[in-house]
View (cartoon, rainbow, N blue to C red):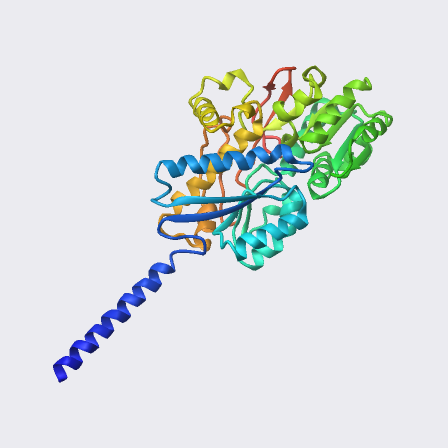
Length: 406
């Protein structure tokens, strides 16, 4: 009898040990992760005023499908759930809550838009769900102390605006500057960044500002008003639809300012072509990505690989859109971080790995630009290079710079 009790006790102890091991193993997974799957959520404006950005989500989906065809990441397939929020913050909130609470996604990746991400910013951090590599360069995303679950990817709009300000101060010291901007945190970041970059000269140099709402049909009236200010420099902080309208209207009314066009509204395919290629000649912008219309990159291994990917996944209609190259680079970054996680796929560890990037080189980034993060720095890309539109493509000039001008 005693022997049977000993055997039973031993079996119970073994069961407890196995159960403990199972609990430990389960502790290595966050919601949305199994031995075979990693569930990732995303919102993109596939419709609405910023629908030109929808190519990002399409490229992500194709890239993750390609990874899955090759066996996934560490043996796990990516289940990418992307939904259309139409660039509407209330809709973003609804969709993200649904993905987090019902679909149980592991994280939200590359959700697009400053106002959309602002709407879910608090919710994501209160619930400790990664809001990772979001598709907006607003300066507030780099705040790991107060928002440890949110990380940006794009160079900040502040860095970009400082680069434009440095150019103006050096080359156009007597400039009269007009600014057209979207009336939300996205547009205001550019305006505030320009003011900060110009320093004590801002009040004198910025002679006019005009804002627009995403519900406005056109920005024609705003452009005419800015031209009337006598400004000889124009900074446009606009999404593709309104950026194209601005380029076209500036040309049509015969205004010839030095025109700076923000990086998230400079695509040849969705901005310059609709505006009229000849109408954008001389426009200046900044970038950290190889523009796919620039012939100098088209013989590189990175471009060839990207082009083959685009053609084989039904995306050949977007090969003149720099947003397709950006979306590809986003997906590569996410895949790299998931590889770094190994089998420790908790939400805490994915943020830890995302904050451990060191000189990560991506095939479509400009030479000399790498991704770097740390526990105190959630802004991976800090450098850009100026470029000028020649009627066909963007031509790089000058050195790779940070917001400090170096």
